[in-house]
Length: 312
Image (tube, rainbow, N blue to C red; front, side, top):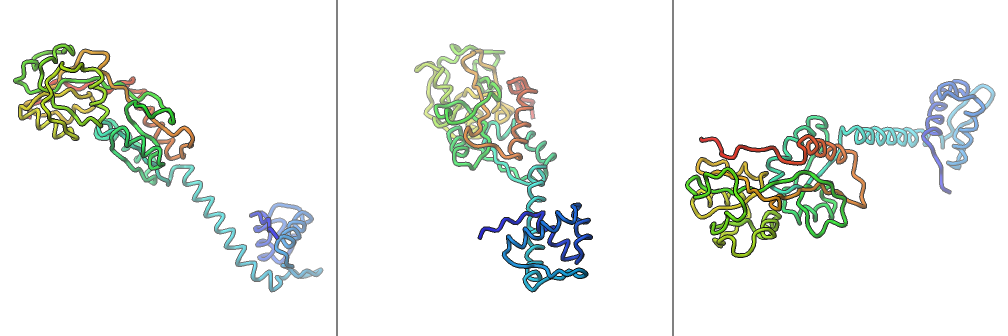
């Protein structure tokens, strides 16, 4: 037989076990004595056992009632603990949220958001994955990440997307390069430049290849995964590169300058991506709210940086 035991019935049982008086127990439960008696009868029917001996003067537990007292106390304690735990999740006093972001965002734009979130909700564990665009989407697809901050691509139809910011491109070169004195440059002025590229798997390279016509620049043959490596190669005079504004913190070296490329097509849109078929947890929604708030505050574009890094 399926037993339908509510916490209300369990509390009534424990009240009678403590008071050994129907009237006093009914008062404790804030119900009439007749309603209370009906609750005890319903509990006994559900358990399939007589739990109390009654006469005109005394109420006492049966042997089965003595056994059920410990069961009832444990059930009530477990339920109260479960509800308290759930309240902690709802209030963001505990929980987990995971976010995947492009390395350029994970290293510069995102950390202040994570710091603000941790200050507000110190009990929530935050996990960060810095990964290229396709890997960000894979983490979201597998449920390992709740939110992804990434570039547009062909595999976004299964997700919900919204704009994060627009990321314009800059030429990075040595101070002694022929273009180093320009305030802004056109794409056509890149002709003949010896170009060091990021790997073809990166969203930066894919966006750049879609804009630069074949033969516009000279490919040095150097393709790297990491921005720090790219900066070192440029500083050593092995070529130049075109990178998004959000990556410029990696190129703040004494011998390098960064110059905005004046080309509407050389602006990388970045997106906030979330699951379409899966609701966000309360903890994840809180982080998403902070990400959206920062995106709105910055007006859809990254904060402008100085074209020339300070001398060190």
